[in-house]
Image 1: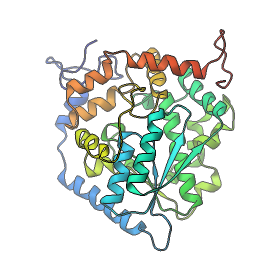
Image 2: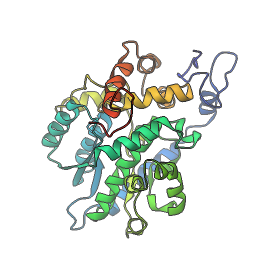
Image 3: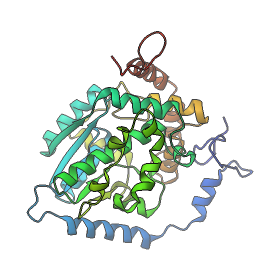
Length: 344
């Protein structure tokens, strides 16, 4: 497969073109844009102002942190605790496919940083229904699936909904996410925003296919209710890592000091979740490009990862994606006919 000679985007990525020297159109556009120092300073200022304005005034917590046990959310909790001295509630969304090592990592990190923690767990048959429909059908617009598999889009949305719901219930003013710079579409509005700014009907329309199948109950997992969106003040959703700086080698070094170790039963693109591999296989089969192509390419452009390291994750020479995905499929499907039955 032809890939960009500068990043790792393949020729199958939607809308891509290449120069005569093999550089993709996205890299060309990235190089043509001037890096705005003022924009970076403004984002730092915006983050500082929001954090200071939301810092506890008699509340139990300053922020709810989505804590998957992966490397990025682990490093985020460390930064928020050590750099900003925030009172945190870490929330883990258990999708039923987290690595056993992730729970050990979560336990070690929470103890090392002395942070309160809770786990949210929904009915597994309902979760499996959402994951299967997200993998087997085109439930999201194509422009979203350029940046991740349908399985991950659904799971991340459930994570955000669960953390927002927790923040609203406990009157916590901020929800913190451990997104890397490569996981965002690079607009400043994605870094600090309030999720209730999007009209309720438009949000519901995004999940309409999942509301039809597997059922209308899926809306409650994927989005807040109309009343919850009216909560005042509504929590901010913040992704601090792209603002504060992202160095993968430094992240691994620091979190190891907290008792974190990399799981061995996940694919090369995940540090916590086995389900990710299933989403990758289904996405590649349907769209003919890897759901991490964009993220890895963006990290290469930003200098946060070498091109060789990105290629190794995407090309998976040890076949970890297929191996883990096969194990996950046996949990999602049951019986010789492959009929979904909720994962017995």
